[in-house]
Length: 372
Image 1: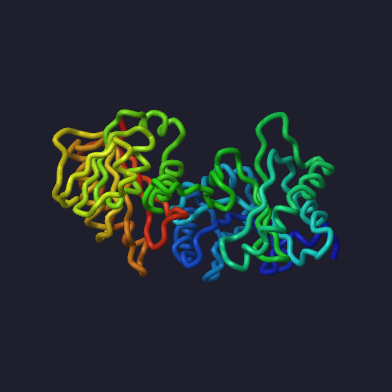
Image 2: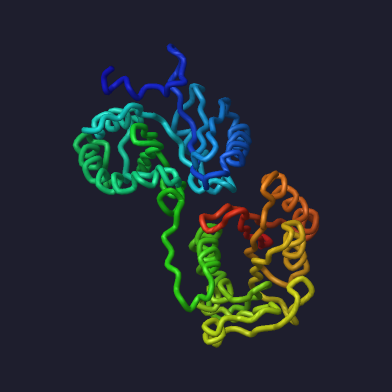
């Protein structure tokens, strides 16, 4: 088998059938079922026939189609924010099987040629599993030789018009998926895994969850506009203060509501007022810009609380966490969406964004605001 034919179709493609391609989503291991359901619904929305293939524990899900449509159309519909449970969502156009131990670049470059275009960037990724992580060292070593091979073939350019990014995902040591993401459509970090540093004074690792949410759920323009120093915020269920510190560190004045104690390092910012009260019953004397909430409580109860704060004008926008049951996670999210819609439908149009963050476990983090 020549290098030009090895990549033409995945093993499950029957002889004589059109070459398969589609979407590939990375996720936390154990959430493949939820991603498969979301990916199926997404394909239905963009009127694409095909099938989803998911292996429990693989930390990635593939949608495959053989419809005769331009790959550019497939890529144009793809945005990693589309699926709540996907850390990364990419349109794939080729799969290379049986990669040799030596000279892996040659078959990958041959597969890259089938895209019919050059690429502006190269990213090597793996699923987030213990087995796949063992390839991280190889990916670091292989990135430069592969980029040089792509440049030699005229498939990598750093100048000129905006080109798609080439993502090469190694699902195992002998298999590479080639994906072409339009600029700004892929996750902010390779594999959708942020590299955030935990500062001691932040008091709790939960601060990383809010930090990731601010980058993932808000645009740069929204962060600049809505996280200005001097704005007021409320943190419900604040102790020991990981989320409070994240806001205070950005210059916001925070009312931390919790019957438990706050960390001394958080109070030392001088930006925090600690109120010992129940987060479900306490209300501010005047409206605030932000409400954040990471309380361990039934997700429907938290969703209803946040929707009421937004609907009544007590806050302009909110980031909150929903602790999901082990089963029927998507159903629980839809229940929360319905509760929010019931409260806000008559108030005005609203923006609800939900994402299963890297720092989330059996939970999702959401952003809610009325559209002004």
